[in-house]
Amino acid sequence: MLRTVLLAIVVGTLVSLFANVATTVYLHRTLAHRALTLRPAVTQAFRSVIWISTGSRPRQWVAVHRKHHAFTDVAGDPHSPVLNGWIKVQMLNVQMYRGEARNPATVARYAKDLPPTRLDRVYYDHALVGLAVGVGALCFVFGWQVGLLASFVHVNLYLGGSAAVNAIGHHFGSRPYDNSAGNLQWLALITAGEGLHNNHHAAPTSAKLAHRWFEIDPGWYVIKVLTWLRLAKVRLADLRLTQSARGRTAA
Image (cartoon, rainbow, N blue to C red; front, side):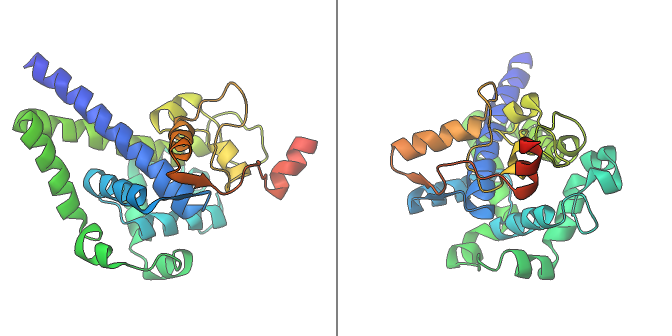
């Protein structure tokens, strides 16, 4: 039994790792902020990982995130700990996300550049099917006990980490730039770089979230490998700070 549990923890953690990499590289940096472009084959690979590991619909994820940037920590932010308290956002982040993602007006306004494709209609818009495929694959490869336990581990790690970026990442951490987000290196290691949230809000179009030599952005390492293989192209080579971030830095 102990061996089964340990194997499930390892497998679930690896699944969450892949899901977090796909989320930050594809959903966040590529789609939401257009910080890089990916080859079609890589795009479909990331979409498949998202589909079977999270069930997220890319255009909904992008719409909610872009609205968060448009109304960061003010009325209209889908998941602000400043407005709701960080504990509430940590506990109810999924509910807050789903409520905004299902708002047709939000999707129409903030993801109008991502119309549904044929693959969306056939595969990717069917979240429960994708999750069933993912859980089924784990059960087929590792047996039903490990598969189900690993799925449980993954769900808690992934959803907990995503919630922490929105909740803890807008309440705690260092703030080298003038915005309400914080940098938390330990959270960045868990979420493939997303914990460097103050940096991201200071330069949202940057494909690299680490701005200083001692900061570690695992997602950037994946992007670098993809660029070396000519499977990805970074849009902006230099760091472009927002006006408020430039003002704080100059001061």
